[in-house]
Image (cartoon, one colour):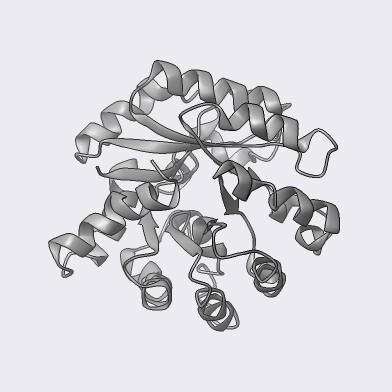
Length: 276
């Protein structure tokens, strides 16, 4: 299977999506499975992983409902309050669904830069192994040192997936210290990385594949062909380019690899990390 490892759905409203600025008019509307399906077919992909965009159980349950109704949704990364007393009960309920594959928290929006190291949060994430769920790490480069300390606290059975290559400063052309910290994080064999979200860290109106290449090279070299996966971050990516153009960047970058290794990055690794 070829799998887009990272995309979102939403019914647009300003209350839930206040983070969309005036320059994001292209995504201020509803985006549903029927909108993504033709895009997947256009590049010969079989399906995708739907990832939470709101931090609510309502959102998580809605995504599972969409997954029930749409076979091209291969898995759901939902949200659960992992610090709450009810975390395990909610995880147990979530994990019963055959397409429930992981959990995510929007770490980079937390005011506390050390949020992910809070004992209550670490304790909640430690529950995921019991339910065979992956944890998606959504951070900025400033959080990478904490992420290394965070991952150290878990057994190698707990799979982590770094979203959007940790959002390096592509527009400014800055590689370090992101590069060295990504290389350090990649030493943990249970950490994967999504080749996604890069165009929105570049100059939206003037980016080229060449702008992204140094960052792609760092991640692919660090994690290797067995632990990176293609992702679109659709529909967020539409502020900077079409779905096919965004996906083509990675497809072109890996074109010289063997067919076996290309298929790992285009779906096999996502299937492994999310136990599809």
